[in-house]
Length: 207
Image 1 (cartoon, rainbow, N blue to C red):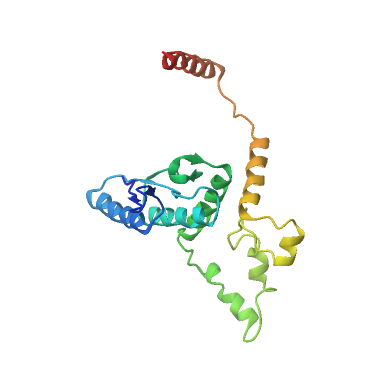
Image 2: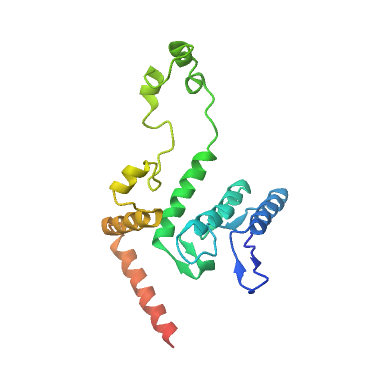
């Protein structure tokens, strides 16, 4: 696998989400495919101290090569901040949005008569528009990626609704998800066995 990072030559601090780490991911992915081996890589890695633009673009600099390299197993996919020293709820939500977008982008195109919509072109004709076409009416709800975090409102509407930045919206989503969480059911005997194991290991680690 690959967990490559370079260092800041001025401070000696490790750097994540750099072009060099992305190139390393792509190269090690090629080596893994050459030898027919499964490939593990890092995920949304970055050096930012908070869930800001730097965290987003550095994470994408790692996640995009991860997709391109064909990684079989990805660690630290979401929530990583400050070189792995911090786990962030807001960053987790942002990373999930990035991952959903990449998943949509890397889904193979459907090339069929329906998807190419030749009948819609005939229906609309020269100089018309497709907004009212039957093909559009049948597909407009799910034909494009629909973000759960990103905002495409104009400035006036965005300002009226609180002028919430990405990290603020991510915080609200994280809190809502945590509040709505319901513990999945587990067989009572399995739970008892796990509780016993945790209690035993906790005592052993105290020694």
